[in-house]
Length: 112
Image 1 (cartoon, one colour):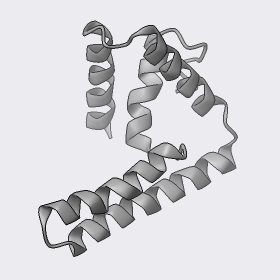
Image 2 (cartoon, rainbow, N blue to C red; image 1 turned 60 degrees about the vertical axis):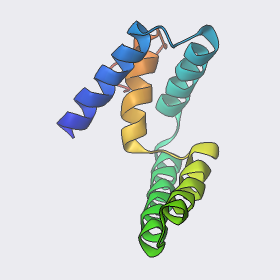
Image 3 (tube, rainbow, N blue to C red; image 1 turned 30 degrees about the vertical axis):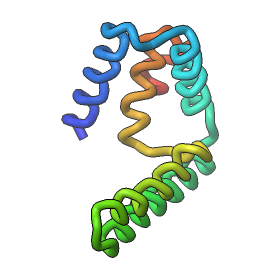
């Protein structure tokens, strides 16, 4: 966990230093961080469970596929689903929350 926190935080710093965070991307990161920190506990846990289900499905289907293209397609749809519908992935949150905080989101370090 400590390695994930450090790696995601370093990646967030690099995203800012590389100036890839244009105003639209920065606003999205800030609004995402604020939304994730202000959500209620039970819906957040349910979103995390559903996300784990999608990731596990991707791993299972990729393992069942024989060729590289099948493995890529098997991973693509479940992962795109959880990103598209806004489920909670703990490691992805370890990037977006510090990024939003560094960009000036009105959240506290304790909320992150």
